[in-house]
Image (tube, rainbow, N blue to C red):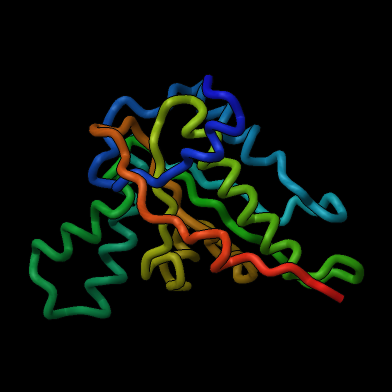
Length: 189
């Protein structure tokens, strides 16, 4: 396992097309979800949850996505419908991080939303620590209430991200990162 600072310095997304089998084992999946849930959570509200898409369930969810897409795009050809049908089947495992932030007398919703984002990032870091690759995406269906309802989300829930997980086919290439002087200021009082 890489040391923590090396892991954090080298975290990067892997193109979904480059994520293949094998995916995480059941024990690895439990580890990933346990680590993903160890995030700041003001008030212990657990304002997030996870939906695991694996095996045939990835294509069953894809049918939902394709059905909604087809309803909105009747002119779409079979190839485009197939793209939509396989959205969650491009990697061996997909985990949706669901934000269930809600009004609270003491805890701002914004903090709850950030906690869901932290859960997604912890998941990504754990994936890399176990030697897998991942890609965090939100595509059109992450915002379509018809799809979300059929995937089991309540009206107040939103997808923070679909995390695609698998074994990288090739080493992930890093992208340019912003120089610190362009993103850091110091408050001088």
